[in-house]
Length: 425
Image 1: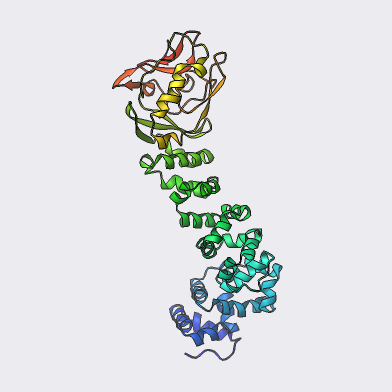
Image 2: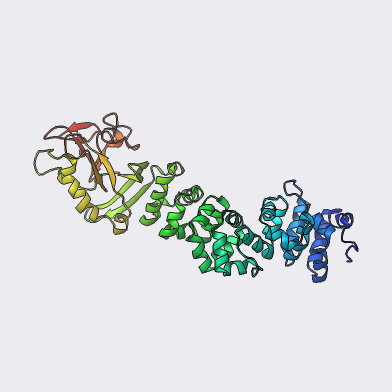
């Protein structure tokens, strides 16, 4: 195949490449597979204007396929070097060193995808946006290896906006250990990454959900991000009950930040053995209540214990023996990994009996929390308690009464009896 003799013969190229969809695509592949012809095409004004000048905003499958073939080859830099001067009527060196012109390239509907595919000229454009020298930068690899140039790019909002929208460039950075550390440690760069959904998707794909959850620094970067939170909420929904306690704890932290994304997790269950008390099942009752991500309620009674050694409510929940036992002996009988992720919450308590609020990891509900008294004077009602029947708790297979932390008088705490109703003992 011989190429058109004149470099401006746009019509000839239109006939060769677009006169017939399939034949045109085949011709371009044939040309790009032959070094001499590929270089001639990438130096031909008519061909470049036809292929790269198409506006992607105007749907045209043939044009997009032709563009993809040209920009996916080893001659992309050459094509961009010869095409941009036709668009901006200046030398390529002046074009890529002018910040205003580079901004226009990045924003242009036809120039943006073209520059994004160029290794050499994209690297120089990024240096220009970051206001750092591009003299020794002739590839993205050069840019990543140059500590001062990379730092300038990471600190530049305009340059990082381009990086964040380039999966190719992000992966190049992530696959270089030093560059990856620089990226993750740069607040400006990561702020832009976290505001770019496609960039978040790229990082999540690179590290994996588990990898981010397991790394404290990564998790702290990602936990406020909607894209990551939704991805985790979806990924772990079906395996929640079998996940490690560490993962469940991380998901709870995400749920605290993004409660609506985890709303479907209500009523999910976990089961575990309590040393000396057998295996028990817990239901996830509420999301983001009391400042905790997940609030679990035991489906039965984990054991038996008195509120106090004598019939007194002096000091209320704050000072009672039951509270000390739950947050001491009972908590220490939980699996160690689970104990490490259980968070303390602030509990409201009866006025006049001990502290108005206490900080607890394990606690027994109040009468407002189980729905046996209106209002939230001692905490809002847990969603799991909607009637007497779901307030019933069993010990050893038989329904029995169980304590509430609410004080009734100087000698009585309130209890739920075996039919799920309220009583005072």
